[in-house]
Length: 400
Image 1: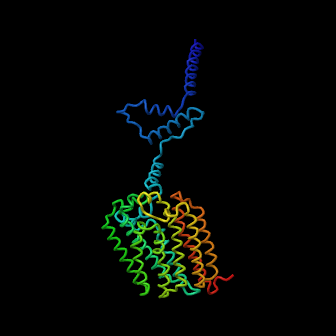
Image 2: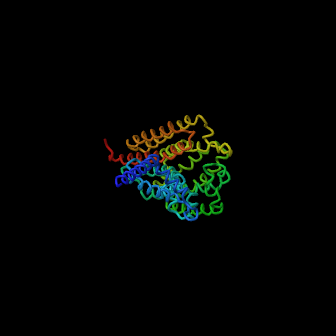
Image 3: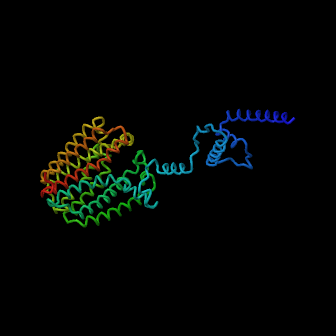
């Protein structure tokens, strides 16, 4: 009788174990967990699981089933983002695709529109305005000596303020045009963040600070510097009347090539400063024509003019000529200033950089045009390094 009972119990155990084995063979732990989470709940007593809760549930369920068998339960990575990933993606998106600048991160909200109006978030314009000043100041230094650091600091502050004032004037005069151009429609005045009156008050503030810097210079330089304001105020109007606003910008942006020398020497040496000034104008025609290709479609719609529209498909031929003229002017200025051989080695390197820009720029790509435009800060830095080394070599510091 005992053997009979043992036989029947063993049959029941074998039958039950075979059914469990069959169930496990067809079992997908992830789908079962999700089915349990979605089907076996009371909406009132068991509220829907939120994504992180469901993720934790899936993880715990995998652990439990994994302890019951030796087969692989993996094959899936949950698509629910973790809290950390959510925070990371949120921080990226909040930055506007990487567009957040130090202005957004560190300045008070009330100040940010004014900082953007002065383009403090885009320092490339300040560099392009500053480099001709620094070249000229360094050329005017005594042979074998470093340039006047105090003068360079004054001009750096002046470049920052004058560039900001120029951008403010531009935005005030072009506020109606800027609303129709994709790249400029979110500028503070065009977008309505600042009123024209607020912009005008900010312009007065910048000019007042600029006047304070100008008064630190000699009388000759004060008159010369003040005369540049005519160019600064009239430049934004040029695109309405001529296809050569970039040339007018060159006359404006490179005024420091004259002013830097005058601030050190108290007068001008035309044989040195005029070729330097002309080379800066040709340099501006190169980089600002490339820059203007970003807006050529919008410019056509709005009806404003630029060298990008004037040159069209012949742009690279034109800016190649401007680049050659730029390098020639720099060479002539350095020769007349009796700068040593390191200057010409640097000039060769700068010529290669300028040639790289012209040769490789994709004028149909806004992003590439902007990259090449911004790279001109390095052209200016290379020339400065050459002028500095060449001036120091005049006393035999750099001797082969």
